[in-house]
Length: 489
Image (cartoon, rainbow, N blue to C red):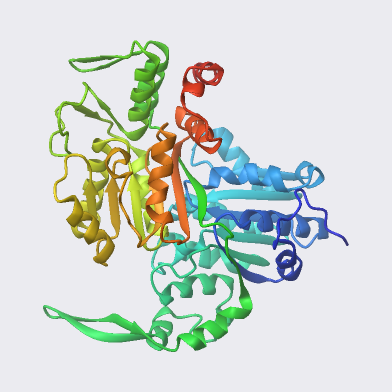
């Protein structure tokens, strides 16, 4: 039977689809923007049309799983879409949502469920996912950005290892299969099939580690434990994995990805007040925005998790928060930490405001995984900038470069970085190009991430940047008015 594509394959996509679509377990280790979602949608559509499955479960990072419904509509044929029921996971205890979840697990036809990885850390999410795959006569399961399941002790990793065997087809989707060490391969290969690594190495992590890692006893007080000091038998590991994965490299030096976040109730209330009345009130402080560009600036601050109660007067550091209102709930900072946990190597993090730099630094300070030595800041208020740049480039323990575009967009050469994150979205197209250019001189592949709050001005700004338009055409034009009308309703 000939497969009908919803969208034609780009160069290099067709052969892997035809070669691997019927494999029970396989990993598509493709770079950013090479089509991992395209091949996944087409594999699911193929098996739906063949009758080999009637269910599919996609597990994706929290900031990315909302994008999958759009990818499904884009790449699946109209016929497949009309005959498939789709459910995007919601962590709501409403009667309506509970009823939908029950309905999903009882349906007889084709069903695709898209969940965020964080949901598998909860009993409710794990129970639903397991119940869904068991209710299917055949199920396809894919882990998007599968490197986030490299910790064999985490609840979400244990969940996918438990759910996976119930699925007839299992897929890994990632461009960073080995994020930190060769030991990252164990949970991902076990999800595909323990048989890949062999009867001993594929089932028990400690047996696997003993064989592929060089261990040295570490004494801490009266405790003694093994620590990894090197690796061995890696050629053997590569030969075991090779038949079950394929690779695709991006043709361009930069790939772009979006991590979606959302505003808290307090932020949304402030956001709506600013869009309708142009006034915010915090205790004894009254903040007004009589001009549209001022309003735009305040809206972007709200999305970032704070508001300057008056214009900055000199350096405003994270130690001096007298002129800043911080929102108690800020999903953006938590989403950033989640993103940093799944990407490898050194990372440049751009934030338009020094208050944001301070929040990120505080979060890293409190992190057991990172700590105070894991970053440097680079803002207008920082001294010894040359030393900060040197430390990021040369110190292997310094993983994060936190900078404002105003200070760091010119003259920096940050060649070790593999990823760049725009924590907030700026309307300055020149600054954007200059920031991305801090790595382009080294001809390394760079992944650029934009953290964007759904339903906010940030979505419009990003579209304008993609089109290489000036922000004034959006802020002062028709799109701005239409967006306000949509937001206020």
